[in-house]
Length: 387
Ligand SMILES: [Zn+2]
Ligand SMILES: [Zn+2]
Image 1 (cartoon, helix red, strand yellow):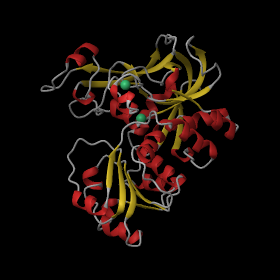
Image 2 (image 1 turned 180 degrees about the horizontal axis):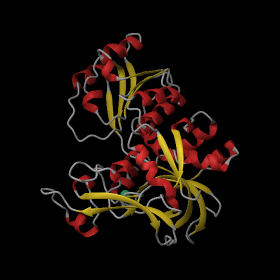
Image 3 (image 1 turned 180 degrees about the vertical axis):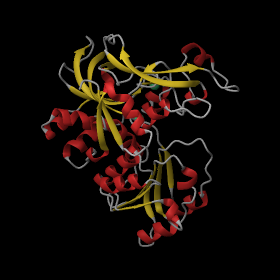
Image 4 (image 1 turned 90 degrees about the vertical axis):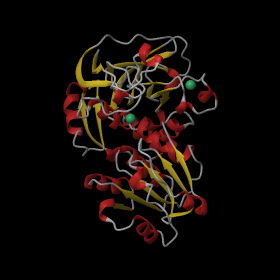
């Protein structure tokens, strides 16, 4: 089959202490400290072998994610930018949809011909975290497209337990191709859904909501806030094109934070002096987004933090205490019924992710798509491995 592979050199940085597990598995915990000189190529790989609890999927559409870009891009020393769990060489791609073409003999709930999308987090179901229901924090996790072969390929074999059928979406649209393209957006949308509705159950229709960051996750959060009945969605990003996209997705106002005088004053002005109810951090810059927040947070406000940042962030905890504010860190998209709920929202017509898809490319032209995304002008580009 044709597939896109990323290769990189195993060269742990001086001072990075490899764990025994990392030495044995060659699975780096902090990819950016280990993998050097990334390069992508498209070529032939053997077809995957199907295990008894797996299904074979003919990949229809696969999104290029910011994480893919951060594995493809290197810093000045040549190390990949992505700081997470990684093993190379590997086929990238974790936001995808496709058609089941073969079913392992233990699989009960899927059949040949089913259209599906798949959770990226390959949770084990056996560790303490999984048994608590916190599958996004699985301690035996493999990550599809990061540590195991991904979906930028004509075929992929995945365990049936990570698959979700998109039947209602295909039925509603009456167009399988369109449904499969949108289904590739379920994973990134699921990241925002998990952060907003699972991690901390305080959402109320009517909320005044702030979304920091206009990348795919922030844009998904805007669309979800709209679908969930936010009465205002105030978006922030430093890019003009992303602010425009934020408005298309449902933001009621959109600002470049460098062009406002005072964040708290602005939020108080927009909310008739009450402050906002719900804040989504999807910018990965909490020192600029969350740190300044004080009176702009309404009484009882919730903050959910999705953007990744290793830098320490000073927070006004005194305000959190006095105003009854709560903050949740959020990671992942798996479990909790998130995938089926996102699929249903899309099928119902109340969640439209279509404006975010700016282009589609055949797999053979994937390099051009990666190159184009370096400019960070597109919200989402999809590769179509089977045409
Ligand atoms: Zn992703
Ligand atoms: Zn687990």
